[in-house]
Amino acid sequence: MAFNKPKKPLFSLNSSLCTTLFFIVLFTIPILLLLHTPTNSICTTTSSKIKSWSGDLRDAEFSWNRLKFNDKNPPLKTLKIAVFSRKWPMSATPGGMERHAYTLHMAMASRGHQVHVFTSPPMEHVTPTTSHMIDDSSQSSPIIHWHEGEAGRWRYNKAWEQYQEENEREPFDVIHSESVALPHHVALSLPNLVVSWHGIALESVQSSIFQDLARNPNEPMSSSFNQGLQGMIPKVLNEIRFFHNYAHHVAISDSCGEMLRDVYQIPRKRVHVIVNGVDEKDFCEDSRLGHDFGSNIGLPQNATIVLGVAGRLVKDKGHPLLHAAFSQLKEKYPNVYLIVAGSGPWLQRYKDLGPQVIVLGSMNPSELKAFYNSIDIFVNPTLRPQGLDLTLMEAMISGKPIMASRFPSIKGTIVVNDEYGFMFTPNVESLVEALERVVEEGRGKLARRGKACREYASSMFTAKKMALAYERLFLCIKNETFCTYH
Ligand SMILES: *[C@@H]1O[C@H](CO)[C@@H](O)[C@H](O)[C@H]1NC(C)=O
Ligand SMILES: *[C@@H]1O[C@H](CO)[C@@H](O)[C@H](O)[C@H]1NC(C)=O
Image 1 (cartoon, protein in one colour):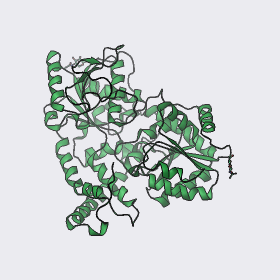
Image 2: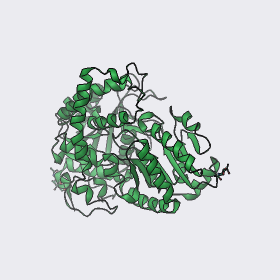
Image 3: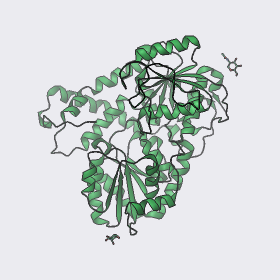
Image 4: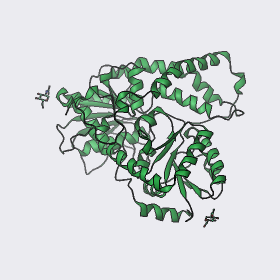
């Protein structure tokens, strides 16, 4: 997100904006309170054990990742699946909802389903002009249909034409849209459509509240942020009205599922929570690897606690908070270190904090794996409650506890047990307080927390678990007999 140079100081807000702000506050406080009250399903399922539950899967309000699914190959039935994704990644660039589509549907294809991906022309090297390009020659599926036109520019109507042609040849069993890749007016006529939401407008409202509260009082609000606020409530209302057109909804966090049911008023049987997964081959617990990595980057032997942060070093990921909090902490604890993996505008400011901060820049996936192993605890000070950062799952799968902003998504899905780590209100004082608790607690206890995290995350957040849950949902849409879970 770009933060333009502010044009207007806060005190000259016009009256319509004040009204909007007032409305946002009025509207969101009850919602935030509501979201902070855990429902029974969340309270009773905080253990990492596979849930013993039976019933119609469409009634499940908890995340499907908690269940155990048939992983026999071939699956109960093989399906023909259409995927609409604005982009299809061609390289190992991590992150984003396109990455989710890729991880999920490569797994679907490897389980024998016939997957057709409808997407925009690729940005990198290959510039195919026709459809039916095959991404990986060793496998006949997924079949990638790049529509015509400019690289990276999504035109749903072109993709829809290609879909129709393929559907006439042999009908699809189920259609999957990544967010609004397939617009709602097209979705309206499709009873076998599943849409995955990676962040909804109501979560952006919360995000704006947290971001503005983290603003220094003498720093004016940026004009782009200001404009964003004004359109916010209309955007939520608009989403509430058009989301109904999609037959089935996948929320990627428990709290998002709750918002879709309770605020967006989507009938509960059409809302399913399936949390995104990370590829378990890419992350693991390996203390030797972590130790070697630490030596290579110059982490001193006398370090007592090593904190780690990863991702884009931008304001809305909470870096102003961590920067300020660590500046205080390092004075009091000269043997506490912070490793920063990632790049962005805050990189130089971290470098300026001196020898207790080790700034690494962007990391490739194998370096990230070593990074997670070299730290004692992973810090995520994000100010954006939309979706869930995959870094949280990656750190947990690597056997590390978490320190994160107290957001409904993180609290309801990730740090569901006090054992898994620490939560703080996203402001400097609260973060400093949490950091001090971590330091006082020491390495041994953090390592025990890490073991618990690993156990929980490897039962919940693997790409395999995500794929099996989606497979079951697709089967249930194809034939209701598959909706029954024992
Ligand atoms: C820890 O070790 C580093 C490098 O070996 C040294 O520069 C630093 O002074 C030590 N810190 C303390 C607090 O002893
Ligand atoms: C659904 O699956 C069941 C069990 O496999 C089968 O008996 C039934 O015919 C299927 N129904 C449809 C409509 O395909």
